[in-house]
Amino acid sequence: MKPWILCAVFLSVALGQETGKVAFEVASIKAAKPMPMGQIQIGMNVDGGMLQYSNVSLRECIRAAYRVKDFQVEGPDWLGSARFDIVAKLPEESSKSQVPEMLQALLAERFKLALHRDSREHAVCAMVVAKGGAKLKPTEIVPAGDPAPGPNAGPGETPRGTMETTMDTSGMHFKASAVPLAALADLVSHLCERPVVDQTGIEGRYDFDLAISPETLRDLPAGGAMTMRQGGGEPPQIDARAEPAGSIFEALQRYGLKLEPRKAPMEVLTVDRIEKEPTAN
Image (cartoon, rainbow, N blue to C red; front, side, top):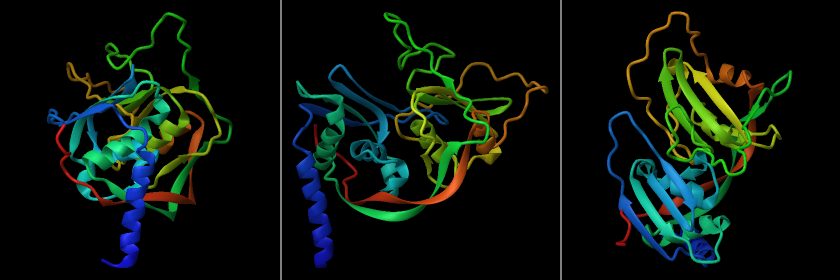
């Protein structure tokens, strides 16, 4: 092996050791059960001193562990296809802000992950405010003592802080509840040819319903802290008066947002080594 390759691997392992000072007390990793055809449901939750990930890929775990976006992770194709259920207990006196470092240690220990960082010029789309100003719907503030809908929200409710996809006669609907614009940019990244970066400068959390024609989609979104649910029940009644959905660009225009092509330096994580199966629990 050439010296510079040895150096890169050594640095990536050292990085994992350095950030692995805080670790989960105990963790269980199991292969996720296959889901019915046409359905994808991903859960990533940390609450009550427990981390609970369901049906997550290793790419999604790496992204959460290193606080990067999907397009910033490079590695074997199966990183996005092999899926796992992970349950882990946080140590006492730890906080949610330390979970990424705990994930780094877990991936290094159980999957033998080693990686290195690069910086590259990347073609992106900047999500900015369009002429005329933003037309956003702020999320309603939940009164004290009235819990917000959680992961098990009832029919018609989108759990706060999540995104879901459904389909009706007008097209595909990508709904979001109580998400920041950075999360919306992550979603739109999966629907465009370029990564999307939020450059609106707008804070807060908002509700969205992006109606998009299936013919304009490059592919379906996946990963991240996103819950995707297949609409069930009776087939939708065809309504000839329903206005057909347009492109993602037209959907964003409804909220006073637009995409502009730009170039920006982006950090890239390249996986040097990772095992397909975790070590035993």
